[in-house]
Image 1 (cartoon, rainbow, N blue to C red):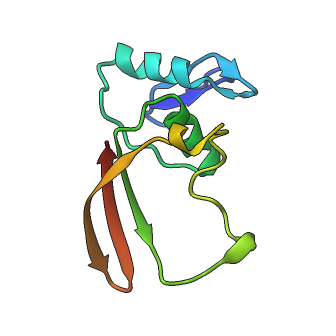
Image 2 (image 1 turned 60 degrees about the vertical axis):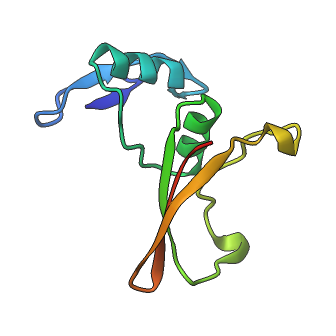
Length: 114
């Protein structure tokens, strides 16, 4: 399934769905409505930090799985989660760690919403 704010056009065998926009991007509420209408209660969200932050701000993230590598990128790196526009630390979404497993030199970390 491909969700877009543009006029839909066929892309292989994927279902292409047009949803409402918010700031030029698919509105998270419209994305969640489109998924729910198709009985999709669990989805993998892959994208940049802005995509991750949008779903977290909408309260739509129940689990996080990510890999951490033993390298430092500093300010040149890309954030895995963009700004959440938190007024205070107490407003931060809370998650509990479920597990950490080594995968080569990296760590695979799994979290669930607290």
